[in-house]
Length: 574
Image 1 (cartoon, helix red, strand yellow):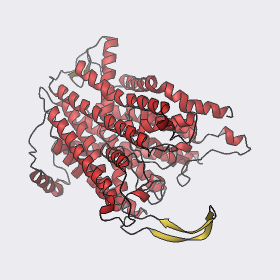
Image 2: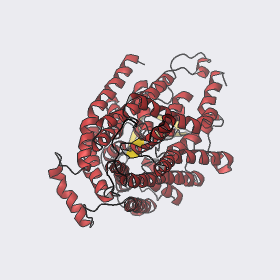
Image 3: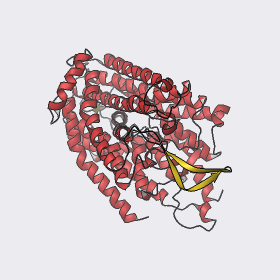
């Protein structure tokens, strides 16, 4: 372990991130405001052709109901398409290993997982999914679900900027532009770079390789190993850029075919966070208040660095149970030795803060505090950057709550970006903020009091509780990562996590669109002496406190019985 090298890696990472968010954020604001960009000449004809073939009028403006119905219908069609692929996989081409169809409950869970941008995987990709399923099913939905999140955010931004108009844009235009101008170009560039570093991209059959030294397992001599192949780079790129997270392989980004070296580890973590971070500048630019965008970015960045620092300390700590056996040294079980403690901590913090869910380490094997931090980042409602689009619109809901409460305390009119915050906005913000938390607590309780839920626990005690809590936190907040150690491919968990993913994604999404429509219909109120400034340090601190306090009040008891209790028992030698 080299502390200086790790700190230097963190510093370079966040310095590059801060440098890049303005140009990318500016580019994305130009896209959604209809301005020409340097790639418009090449892509604009394709965009127009898509509108023509799909009979979409790009000039048509939608109210929130039209936008919400279009969004839900679009995702419903995506679910049906993917579900049919999964249950008929054995009949379709590009299946050299002759994988069978998914069971109905697993197909349901997987299809919902990918349309909700969760990518929760109760299957091993290399032993369950054909090349066609990976490409036409999973990769396509990675683009569509990520674009859906961006479109919803852009609709909310228009709600703040529009005045006395119930229009919040056109869903079909927003999602088309999100894919053609943002997700697709970045994915192509990323895939090419990853291939240059050793990420595979082919359609070959799996390779049978002779072992240098045969091994014996259960009195059986094994002298060959099967090496999976496939079109990995193309899926790897969008799984990161779209904060999707579903790996081509079961080991996800810990697999050398997905993440070959420390450079790709750094690059992949960067691609996970670049769009969520840059959208803060896009927000400020479209509001003609870039200072507000920077304030949101700094707030998120401070929280992320703080939690990452705690996790780094935990990941470099000692395991008292191991030390009691006379073994000294840092406990690195579950961490990726190719990337070191710094690379593991960077990736695991970024992926859980952004609702990506890709993992390069085994969170289940980390020390209790080391696994606690990713869990807290998820349970925060994925507001610390969060998923593409979804993270920022959730943070804006927190900001509305913070403005309302602060206004009540200091006697000022609750206003945010020139719009009065009233009952409708507060109710929608509460729904956005609390939906995932309620889902986590309800389903975790259900799992703990039913035989079907308890039968999947492989690790009893506080650690088993942590695994269940993490599973529902991950699915309800559309993250998708898992602690493992929990058999989630059962009828009970496939159905309950499916419900958690659906409600956790679409109830807040519809609430955001409703709020966008309400805000768009309000008149603009210029800032006055009585307006609470939301782009200054005092409000930024207050916002951080609101996020932390709501999370603490919601989950403290569950965390106390899980990772905190496990840590106490470990320190006492149990």
